Length: 124
Image 1 (cartoon, one colour):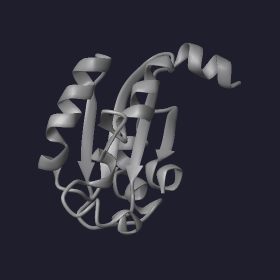
Image 2 (image 1 turned 120 degrees about the vertical axis):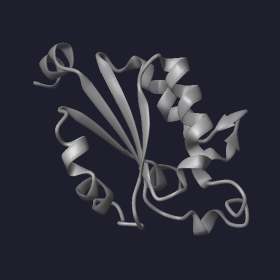
Image 3 (image 1 turned 30 degrees about the vertical axis):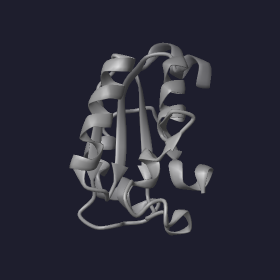
């Protein structure tokens, strides 16, 4: 089932930044936790660059409540590197883990299948 889904359909990757990184303070006061450098790249870069291995990857969405201007340069850079459209979706307020998906459901859920990566849980 999964192989046939990946072989035939476009895949959409959603990265959720759902928390403020309070346990990461004071490091996250000046730099959003996902953009904090690790091994010479923003932390979020490592799982995103692994997306190159996803067959038929058509779009990457970053979902969170950080200011868009904080992610603009990174989104442009990773989109050019992967040659895949990358878009940052800013929540009007922190909605929590599934709240952001619900908030943008009309945009995100119109595309299927999707792969959801909860950044904060993996890197906390």
